[in-house]
Image (cartoon, rainbow over all chains, first blue to last red):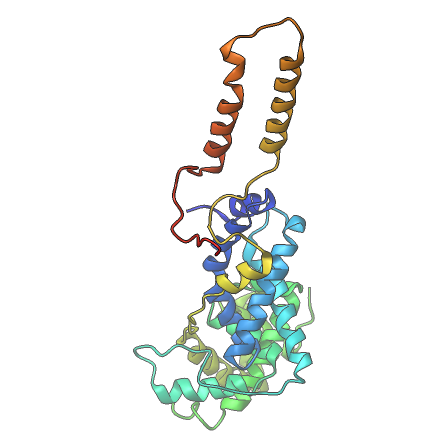
Length: 175
Length: 143
């Protein structure tokens, strides 16, 4: 499989079609991330599409020694927050869109957590899902969000505290 | 080194629970927790929340963004290479050189010079990967 830097080099040589490999490689992950920030599928798809176009136009600035996705994520979240500001955070929550159903996790537990996550601010929801649903390390989150590692630690702490407060009375007494 | 206040202890304890490096040792954190009931009261439900989160996975949505992105960035729909301009410049230069050679008076290069344009035409179609004899059934004659 061609690596990201090779694809980007081909794009920079004028092969616009090569960008397709990057879009197809990262689109599902990117839509998943934008759906954790935005609240409905259509907005998430729009923001992700715009972010890919931003990325294509900014490829000349890309440092080929870096990984593509963390660089792209900065553009993606910029698009998400821009769209959210435009819509004045008009929450239009559709179906459960963050957490995947899976064996060993009750539907009740998943729905309660999904609701609690939805009730958080976008910033809190974003950092929690990056940590626990994607499994990124603190250093990786710091790179994605362009903040110091110490800020990741404190923001995660407050976000978990918020989430725990939303969940109190729903599950913890059962655990 | 950071101050070992309650909030900082909780932040560092959660880092350890996340499998990350903390700024205080586990022994320092545990010693504080053993003495501080407020911290103990706070850490337990947070541990439960982390346990709950660790059992989940992100939903991977279906998405096919390439057709829309392709339209916006102006990529060709054929999926092939973008034709570059340099070969056409080279072709132009070769044709000019050919014409100049032809114009030299009292000099006969024979049939070899005469076939040069044909060779160039074949080379162009070869480069474009096009068959000039292919019949396009989609063409409609204007009446």
